[in-house]
Length: 479
Image 1 (cartoon, rainbow, N blue to C red):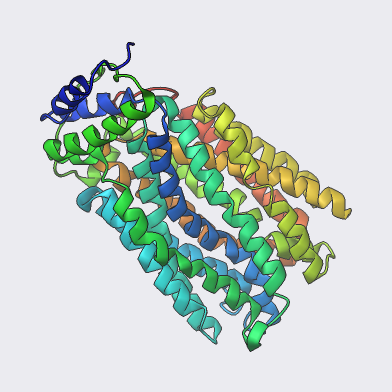
Image 2 (image 1 turned 180 degrees about the vertical axis):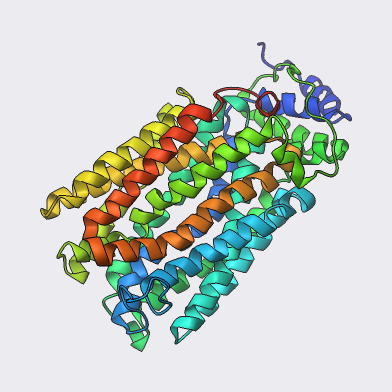
């Protein structure tokens, strides 16, 4: 490919690029973009919004000991549905996530990725701030549920947004990078919990300081909104092809300036990207989506037990192994610090192996290392195996977040993913009670027996029924 000879040539090319185009042509133009700084900047900005959502997801584990210490909650309860127990706090988190993903993510297909991204981030921030000021378990549970609604909408919207912004050859790396940024929130919340939870600075319970920090997401919401354009794929799908072409032309101009060369001509590989302004929920139950929907429903129902069964209970499980509260938070920080390393590994391998293979191997690692964790008493081995379980969990997350958005077309991507993903929220909501019940009656080995069984179902569902997606155009996968 030759370098651009003169500015006029570049301007002419840009005018052509901004001309009206079909949805299939818009998608083909995106898929031939090189992985330049302009693309990675957009991914980074979306990741920053998601950072606060991950902070919210994982502070559940790290403020747990503080909530118990303050007398607001107990670690376990006599009854299965004990709303004064820590399991109720975990359940409230995932009840909100379920409502958000099941009921509201379809709004991103109607009103756009950008609008819902901003609205959900603001929703979460305000609700989290109010939650930090509550003085009773019912009040905390209520606002935890409300905040969870915003988080549930945000996470699905980000996945949908990223899958549509990046070309096919870097989807795996893009999702790994998103998780790399987002997972830095985990050691951040673990470190803050280690500092604050055992104390009460200025007479304010330490867990409240940790929660309040997560509300800062509102401060960057509008800054991100100004710099991230609407999804060109979504605009084209809605019949707004001229607007999509203008947005894409501006991005192409930046990429050509950074790349120093003209972009290659797009090759329309699929005619499946038809303009559709409305879609029906019932379509996900029709071929070829019915089998994918059922597979992902089963997958999400069980993966959440394994993933959050450990991630949301790390300090509490360590305390049950005889570790003191202060030391459990220190050990948990060491384990949490390993979270970004899974996505780092994912950036190397995510586009080299099939997404379904990554999911299956990650689930296997969680099952094996979790079984070994339950047998240990040594602090060093508990931390080492905790790190390995965490790496398996983060790679599982990288794999399935990229995978499930690839299996549905643009016109209903957020709606379908929100529906299947909501099963993980429903499962995680009850997993709080299940883990608490297993911990009370069977100890840590019982907890990991539950997790191992869940991971076996995960491996079977994706390994047997999941389609291949590596380096395929979204339209080709959808059809």
